Image 1: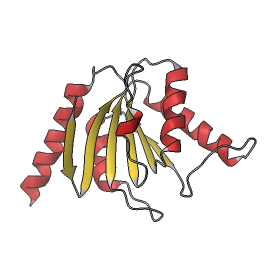
Image 2 (image 1 turned 30 degrees about the vertical axis):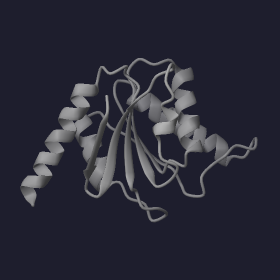
Image 3 (image 1 turned 180 degrees about the vertical axis):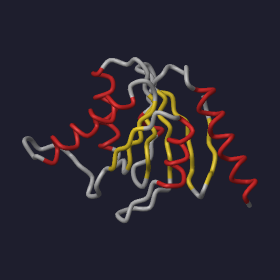
Image 4 (image 1 turned 120 degrees about the horizontal axis):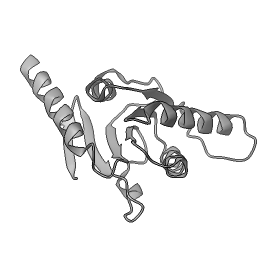
Amino acid sequence: MNLEEVINNRKVKLVGYSTEKNWLDQLPNKDWLCILVVNDKPRRYIGEVITKIIAKDVGYICTMGSQAELVHDLADEEIGYRYAEIEEAYLPSHSIITTWHNDFEDGIWFALFAADSEEFNIKDVVILDMTDGQENQRLKACLEKIKTEESDKE
């Protein structure tokens, strides 16, 4: 499931989530956006991923898949909990923005072209696929279509 492209001056990388492999080492440590694709995963796995990507200074979390709205809400809850400072919990120095998208192509386009921050420059977009590869072809097809449309505009 390896994919690395540069689209709109952003390095795009597809990473497969697995409890058996170290997916975390494939994530950047700053200036990045995570497209989190989730279908039918238990909340404990989603919570673990959200905690770990926050620790890696994610700037944006865009969720897609059948659990997009739930994952978005869980991310917002975790961020809100950390802002409340009930316990010492790490938050990056920048705000973390969260969105959810029902349409894969719209979500990926948003991540590559519309997502922006005054607090940091998005250099990397990581698509973290938590679907055990079920959405792999769909994700690659969306990326290829966007890439083709953008090159046609040039």
